[in-house]
Image (tube, rainbow, N blue to C red; front, side, top):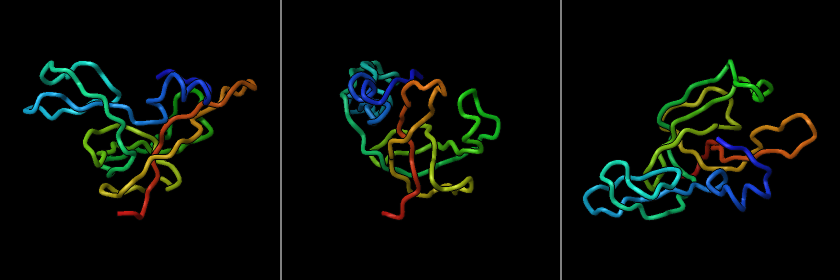
Length: 135
């Protein structure tokens, strides 16, 4: 994943702060893709672009205790497999909820600081999810 400063991110890498994906144009396929791809990997038809609502359900989680470089201050943190309401699945950070996240809980997307380079440079942002009580 490429990380860029927040203003540039919104202009050139919107899929980091919006869930830009697509639906297959074939009536019999129904595949979704996140991020957007031109061609459906399931049937080879054209994909129709779509911005997904950042709401869904947690299917599975894992707690990261040995992080990659740049994430040491955040451990432990939770990564979850999220099934979106409109279809499609993605892996994302689950924030503001500790490390005990149950499968089946509802979540909503939020933009959060992902990391900073500790050199005085710009901060880097991405989509994360937090537990919600909305149904």
